Length: 456
Image 1 (cartoon, rainbow, N blue to C red):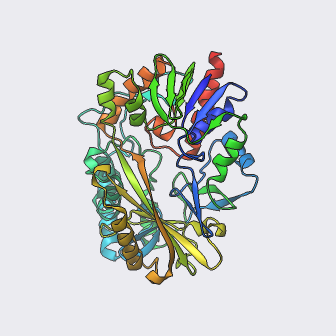
Image 2: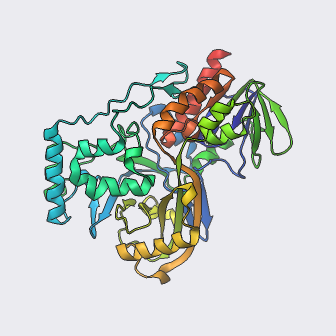
Image 3: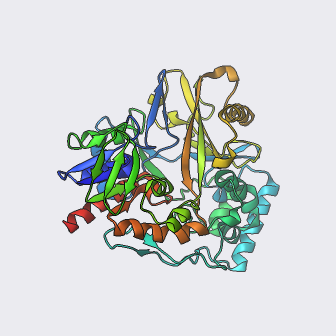
């Protein structure tokens, strides 16, 4: 038997791709999906923050389309930045037209100076080496060296002091909640657009309309709610595979024993886990003390999603999400779900989701977060009057963003190897403790299933 811990996208994908094998997929929640879930209240649909299907793998794209029989919408990105009282297109570094002239000049001069200094845009991070050829997502690279550029070094060396000051540093400090010199740069190479000088100059004068970045086009369920994807995937599993409302309490990796909250203990030939890696380590009874202590050094940022149902039309009805670097605003990003599909709110209404990052040990509290969100939306013009709010509730995501730091680079390879040597495969965003999109988790599940098939 294969036991899968966690029915998020990675776990569901693994179970689906394992086909007719004897599989038990356990999930502590009452519905599948992990963080890929949706909440419905009085005609409003709210996802557990933004979930958009950026699909580059054609086989995954075909699978997703098959899994959304109720239909999907092909969307083009409409992302914006709110700063200095203006709304400018994403990315900031190629769209400063509309900002104060002093800001634009400082950004342009800094960018040219960074180019003249010859700082490479590519971070010299050693290549990762797969621990097992069949599981390329379980990879190790040497610990960060003393002279390896930090995330802050990369920002300043790539974009210059002006762009760093006016967007990258304040925004990322709000998101990561720490000094950016503590963050390594090995997560940025694919996610942050790096325009050419001509694009930066053009964007300081006019809206070029040019598209940048990895995520200009994506899919979203037309019926509203990203949970249509995991629910459909769960429905395709063999009957009896998925067990909900069942938490994992203990794992003995060497013996393949999994003790569940329902009192049962299951023996498995292989265990696949998409649980947060520190959480898995804490419940592994035979994990050596040094690895257990090392797992505790893995850091993350929590996210508080403040969800508002609002009467009337959105002030910027085409905006899908907005980045907010202003340090005076509690949230770093807001989402406007009705720009994805009108099905997200009842007629004559729209919704807003504000994301507030916080360190687990420094929780501002839900009441304060809600109050600060309303104040910030009023200040930025995304809310006209508090009386428009017809519903509000707050959702916390304890493990939201994995922090890339030196401890992570040092700890992960040994943890991966120890578990894999005992037939435990960690996968997905939180199982591998990585910065991943939904597609990546679906791919992980498929790769693990193929790896198991090759071993059989």
